[in-house]
Amino acid sequence: MKKKIVAFLFAAFVLLVAVLYIFFAPATAFDEKAKSFIVEPDKNNKEDVVALLKEKYIIKNGWAFSLLASQLGVWDKLRPGKFEVRNGDNVLSIVRMLRRNRQVEVKLVINKLRTNEDLARLIGKNFSTDSAGVMQFLTSNDSLKPFSIDSNTVMTIVVPNTYAFYWSTGLAKIFTRIKKASDDFWGNGGRMQKATTMGFTSKEIYTIASIVEEETNKEEDKGKIASVYINRLHKGMNLGADPTIKFALKDFLLKRILFQHLTVLSPYNTYKNKGLPPGPICTPSTNTIDAVLNAPATDYIFFVAKPDFSGYSNFSSNFAQHSQYAKEYQQALNEYLSKKQQTEE
Image 1 (cartoon, rainbow, N blue to C red):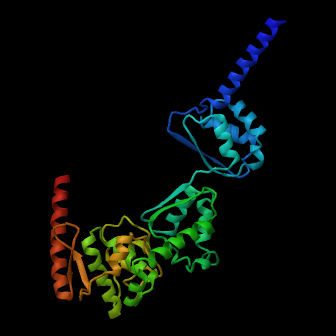
Image 2 (image 1 turned 90 degrees about the vertical axis):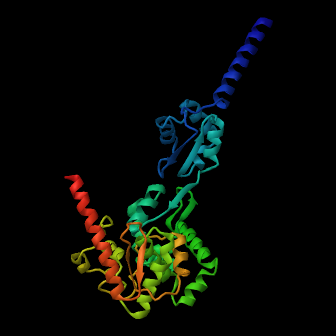
Image 3 (image 1 turned 90 degrees about the horizontal axis):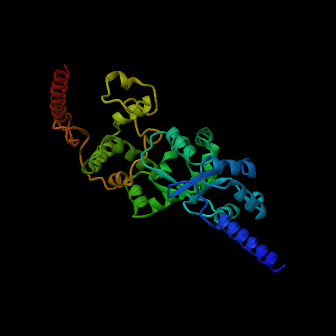
């Protein structure tokens, strides 16, 4: 009898060790530092989630996970979202994460965007709402009205930065956060006061900055280019900004703007229409926005690329000087293209 008791206790001990090992030993099936997965709406049931974790090689033991998750009531509490499992996590920690809906944050990294479609694709790629749903939101002035924007000016609240949300965050909450970041940006450093003193709204400064952003990568020239456009606006001249033509044509690979391009019928054609276009043509960097706000007082109304192809520009306050600078650049460009053609032949 004593031997049977010992044998029973030993078997129980072995079973306990096995159970502890199954639930507390590392349960992950991948080599990376961490792996994420998305629980989609209507797919947060046991069968779909277990299949997903096995399909993505996140867990080794599907039945152990399924058993413990059921015992701890995961399936009644799990919500759609993006979750992350770290290499070496055990079954219990994974189950607790899902039961408590500890979702991983999704980074929305906004650098340079040009169109509403670009923004829609970026959001659709990272969140539960697809790009078509985002575009519907971006083209609905009723949806945008609470943010004091419309389908033309929507980009004016998008300050390039990194924003953190959850995968299931709705569009209204995403834009509320982006709008707050924009308000904070304009409220800092006296930016709004500077814009008002210059006679512009924040949206107008943003739009000018978007054109400057497309004109040059040279920080030293940004303020001077901004002064050119500001002077043209004050004089009632057409902006005549080549980047707005590319935007109107939706052809951002154009290297040279030709006369035929200037005939495009679009409110963004600043050769035909006076004043600023209806909205920005890209999301300018904060440095560019500040360059516009701190643009030097000049009498420049023209600029053209320098003939040394350095990326810098020559500025002038009269057409005669501008014509000379333009002629020098055109001559240098023709010589460069000729040499390039001869080399290729």
